[in-house]
Image (cartoon, rainbow, N blue to C red):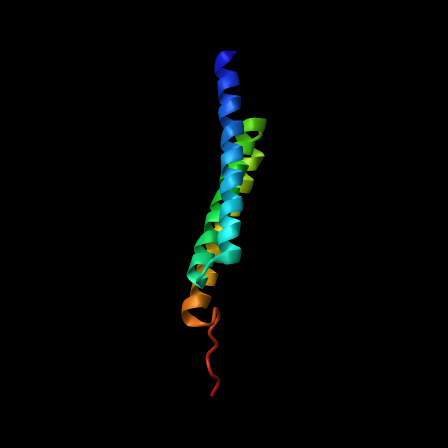
Length: 99
């Protein structure tokens, strides 16, 4: 019984810490001096949201949230790649010229 209480307290504390980190990353998104800083902060927010989802799955005992966290991780990765390509190349989708 004491182990469950310790685990619950640890998960609750981790949720608070990760939520605070999301707020700090949000500050970096708004204030960030350069565009790459903002992109990295958005990627960190996406990672923190995945961590929050996994911690919530541990807290509630529902496996569905783990699947949701995997989907969020994939979406976060794809959006980071798209924004990084836009920042470096200026265009995400290149079109071929027709002859």
